[in-house]
Length: 111
Length: 112
Image (cartoon, rainbow over all chains, first blue to last red; front, side):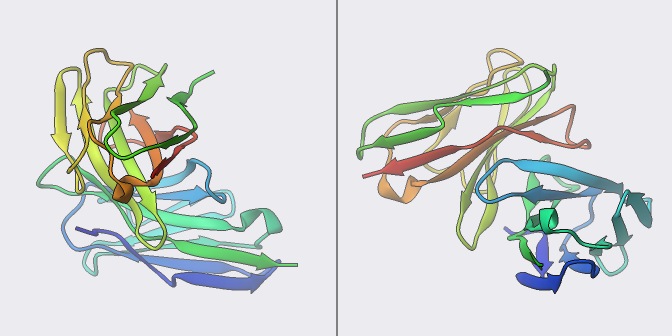
């Protein structure tokens, strides 16, 4: 079962613009995480937000969590060429110990 | 250096020939996972382990086995590989279910 679903599937923006990606999930969670993957390489953890938090910042990243809507958003401000990558959200499920990843958003920063 | 290692990084094999992909972490993490990544499907969890001698099925466990005899190692075993197991495989570890995961570099497996 797919828990996290990212939206959009792909996004192209100009360097310097802000990029926003969304993630929706189906069941209650303990936390939600965002990861970045550069072409075919291992995933790198970006930020974790717990179910009792609403917003979290890390450098140019801002993550929000709305548990009533079962959704999260990742905002990357002042995008750079190096931000070109795929971004995934991952959630746990309260009823077991699995971790569920979404299908990802492919972000392309245009020079 | 804190890391998750996987071996081999690339493997081409034939249908039915048993293989093992090793995974090792040096961070004393309790939670370890195996994922497969296929185009358009994202990452799907195959098996996970909460601690030594404790393993559970993820979303796509069919055709795979794992073991967790030691805390640092979590090998993935394909007893009789089939072409539909051609994929990119990732091992990951974390302190527990509620913390960030550290990923290995991936193993690209092709089953002919």
